[in-house]
Length: 450
Image 1: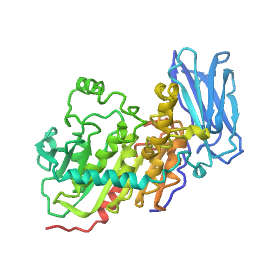
Image 2: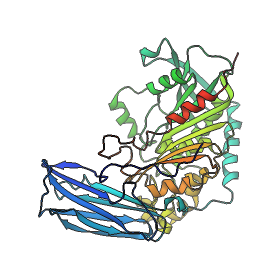
Image 3: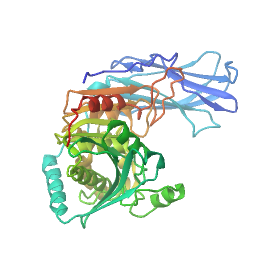
């Protein structure tokens, strides 16, 4: 796969817009790609106009500039006939984020971002000397328990329009310690050893796994498509109120912070173990071609995709959009850390003992350390104004990927999902990449099977 260093966005002015009482606040950088060299000055321009496009003068605009290396600057601007200017730079590789807002809309900031040689970012989270031994032991324990595992496979079809082309199965794996669940979509005409596997993963708030996208992909790619459930819940959850109720369950609510000082109990650790459990189960399916697994997801789903790809020669392609769980200890070097930004959680701020325990535990669950063990083609994406999975944390993982066959798609005006580029030819948000690579890989597979 050809490496692409940067995708340029040529939208005029690279502006973000938000309407508030017929006022339009915009913010942007002086470079369309928002990329700079270290010590180069990034110029941010901030404007306020009315609904007709006429400049509005005399209004107060609040701003906050934050960045790696401890950059923090805040204040106010007064709108005028010309854009107001803010300048900033970094001496180290990293990112700067500008937030601007009107006093009447403090919860709707308009943002712009700038990257300074991000390909040189070095993660702050250390690699434990026994990282490989830790996860080898976890996988071995899962395999041992698999000999007595209860496997429940139940056919369901929540999306009737696919009934003539695909089947969907509700999968439940119970080994007495950890339950893993998900749905498996398969083409209606399957062949023994005739199909690749595509594993897809939920983001952090996901509940259930019975997605119509799985059936669509199974039909389009002639593949086994497994959608993993983050938690031990039912897979088909059609009612929104049930999703909301499940998110409040004690075993789910706050799972990203639970027992982060205990490696055997950490909440997201169980999610990663489910990834390994499901991956190994799928390898036992008679329809699998025995050669090809594709893993893909966004946010926490992107983190899971990287976990699934690490140290597994059968994974041929990993698609991770703005992955979470990157560079947990970034704060130690004044770097942005990714979701869940654990060390800002109150229990790890006020309790020194818990914080010290978490500092030792979290490197085992940091995607930067899994990324080093990824050997397959990898597609990642990053939004420069993403405050959930900040660009610094994403690049910290990308830069240490254990494969040279990698590509990063940059979205200068991308937050955690949406691209705010106002141009008519704007590119997708951070979760809109990897499809072409999946299709190309599937097309290149030999047509085999019994």
